[in-house]
Image (cartoon, rainbow, N blue to C red; front, side):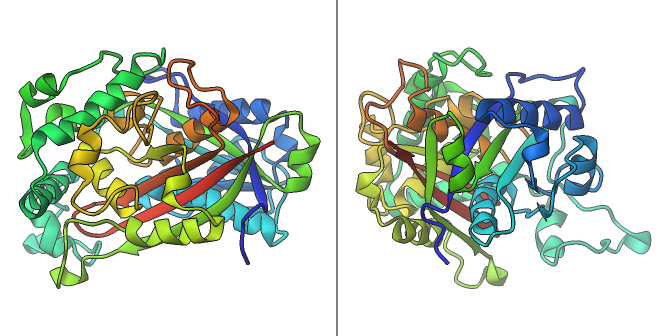
Length: 396
């Protein structure tokens, strides 16, 4: 069953907070839900499906449904694929609506990592020094104190080795994000940076520097996905979901592991085929930007340029709205605006919706933006991860 035209995003809300010491995570979820429902012109009593990822407090979706007083929910999904979770949730909501399981789906994300940061490190050891039970790869990876940036740095280094990509080219991605973030009053970092400033920032994991990394923020966001019938009853611009794809990329024990591509090589073609469009048709792209190398690899894998040509593509300014061929992350993205928890893909959908509605900041609004892509990757780009791609269309 195709989801093309079977569901619409009718509400979108991004929490304005970036530092929330006095607001609980459940409260952020509820405030985001309220904002998205108000944007759509609906109430919590209209919601009959709820989606969140596994990082939601308590019993996840079950706790959130109870906390927010969602009395009429008959469909629940707490799929967990890291940073791509909320891209995947949009596709799953469309599937549920197309199957007749629900009419109004609420998707919420919230987190407060600035109030108690965490790191990916060695797993705790059980008595006698043995590793406690956990992920099957833990005994091979985690004993070395793996952090996310290490793995992404390996991808960057390998891409440089294979294709001649340079640190200067990666820096252009941060430049583009900061060029857009200056117009976003809520962005965590609003200062426009230069390639030279990126290269002058301290090294974190060679070849990635501090300004190659995303921000860490509190906050959240929410989306309302509805059936066509509900969408037509609302006095709001209609953003139609026309394609969705998802795929994992695993390490296979390191056998034939290629660090130069992501799961987007599978999720992207699936979404484009269902949408019956090509990468050349896309007017705006929201690309998950945990690190600059994440963006570069996904642009190639989604077909916006050939493999190995991403460095030249971004260095030509193609990601900058009003200048390039592929305006991206016009809110500043995770590199400058907002990255709540490690599952910030929902912000990619929110900005895509803004662009299609013509509600982005006038300085970065893409003219005649009628077709947009939102893409996320979750997990570690250097090994096991999941990719999610959706394609959205403005309905006249």
